[in-house]
Image (tube, rainbow, N blue to C red; front, top):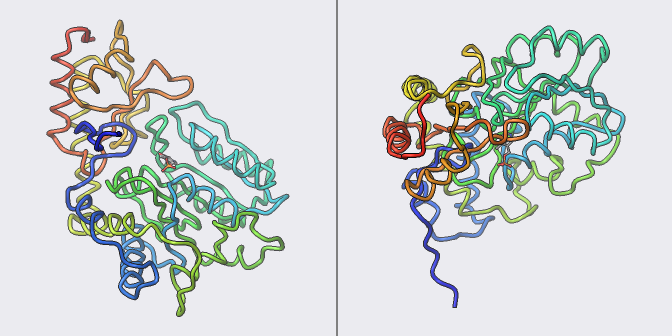
Length: 374
Ligand SMILES: *Cc1c(COP(=O)(O)O)cnc(C)c1O
């Protein structure tokens, strides 16, 4: 016989998922109701409104994709790109690379702005790209590049792409509810996020939002969206419209959890939440630097909630990471790509963004005898 599920109680300080509030876990155990039950329809309406509030947008076409952040990415790309369309994509880490891969699969002509990992895409970079590709359908950028810890400025770049007649698409998976993000003010046309990072809900859902400009592009499509599940023209009637029609069965329990996590964000207040992430980051930064860790990203473009740091000289990062996990129940993330084996990615997201988390990590490190301070 298989044993009853009994996982360790971890402290989640990696690139996601983050710790979930007990209220969110409790919401998940609410009894199931039918996904077309009027009570569930009312819950979906509330979730939609709370997603609009947290994205700071009035966009009508705002809803939640029943799949993780990567599916939100795919939703934006498969709906807004048709074969032959030109797209400019900033690639300064894993997730820009993933967007380029999906865009190619859509048959789009992809112009990559390739920058070193840890850097950002500058307005100069975008101007240069617009010289080679003056009339792109879209520009896609990652707001918070979780593979490197870089925070991409968006406001000025938004004007550049709109003046060129293109759409702005943004990956906000790690920035949403952790750092400043204003969809309407920054004139973002297509945005997706995830639930398991700064929102501190379980993984598996992807809130998305589309501007009127993006809606026009959708209406003007000449070809069918090649994905049935992610086709906005079909799924949008499930999350809105006068008459709810069956499209797929929403993950009822995950939506309960999402609703509770959004309530918690709005109780705290978005700006207060951004400030908390910054304040806890400052403390973490000071303590990590005292131990000899060095930041990968320039201070100016550093994400507060995802800290990419080089270990002090002479440490075996894999050994330390496994000791943290197995002996102290603390999860931190390792590096990806060229930074595998070289950096740690320390997440302080949502419920994992507290001084207690910082102190637990720092004292565990001080306690591990193999850890060498810098
Ligand atoms: C985590 C992440 C994703 C993917 O989200 P999943 O929920 O893992 O599919 C996409 N983009 C960024 C920037 C991320 O951090």
